Image 1 (cartoon, rainbow, N blue to C red):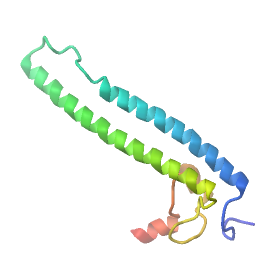
Image 2: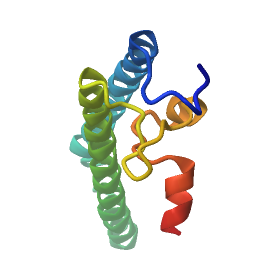
Image 3: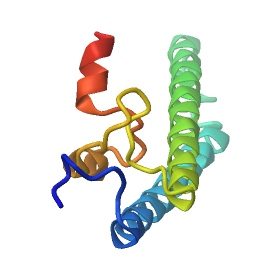
Image 4: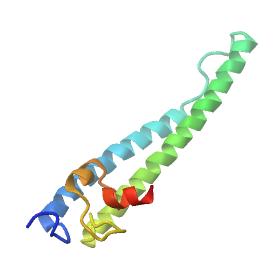
Length: 127
């Protein structure tokens, strides 16, 4: 049975996706921990004894980097949440089914974007 006529993935295929997603969650959580530790350790960089002008630039840079880190952390948290939701869909055996068309999402797309809930066809309809 080819993918065009299948209505859902087999248990073996779901297990493959589950392993891929668990791996991605582990990497994403590691990345989030690095972002958070960089954010928390973003303290004094030894600029106390330098000119006040340089200190002002340094503080501006720290504010910008904290803001960027915060945005990265928010994006990473959303990615992890999306991946965990994909695991729930695997458990419910609804994983890989487009929420607009009801058709199976292309396997290659799911390997690249394992938390996808839209097929390319549905995504193009949104444009």
